[in-house]
Length: 319
Ligand SMILES: [Zn+2]
Figure 1 (spheres, rainbow, N blue to C red):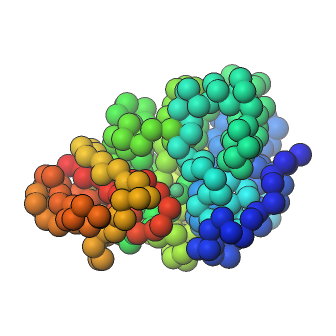
Figure 2 (figure 1 turned 30 degrees about the vertical axis):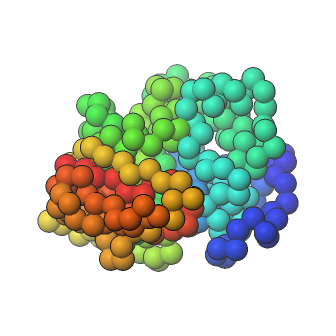
């Protein structure tokens, strides 16, 4: 069913060991076969972020091993299969930057342009369409990610009561405005489709704790959306504490006010040591590029400082 083209090792020499997710974007699903909520949790839209896939596998195994009688339907999905297999953020194009309306419509009209990520996206669109076709109620989506920087994990949410209440139940700080500052993310598309959708940045890419964090967050999503009851979650208190410990003494709501975009030719490099949601002062030198020092334009919290080669968001400032 998959038409992924073979990976060319010249594409990027920064590959880390990947995770084999097989040929299907559907990692697994669990449903008692009776009507109820539909909650989809996706991971690996960026192929260098395997933690979410590992977290979803744990949850699927637990549900299956214990034959948990959930309500409705839970579906676990993997995003960029080819990139996950080789441990790269992407092969040709960032899969989490091409979900704006114009790109999705062009893909439907003209088909893939020969980029690996166009094929991935087309398959995902078809899978989502099939999964939701006969579902009458709200579709819930949580998209799992990890960061290149150290620092506090957080929920990416938009400024609607529904989205905010969902984010609050996931027990991590909520950041509003990233979905506007970063065009073309999955959130933009699925919110426009009427889904109740949030994303989570759950720790650093290769940190084993990121798997625990994302697993805990995904269980909270299953509780919040009515798929499982609290007593069906293994070690619920420990999972809650895992999340609460991460954001202790941190701002719980941050609104993004500034984005520093970068191009590969800029030679952008963050100064070492910045962590996600660290406070910064106006005028503080945060990074350098070919034009010189890059300073914080205002006081605030630094969000997603870029410490990897691939990516075009240098950092954000929130308040
Ligand atoms: Zn990501």
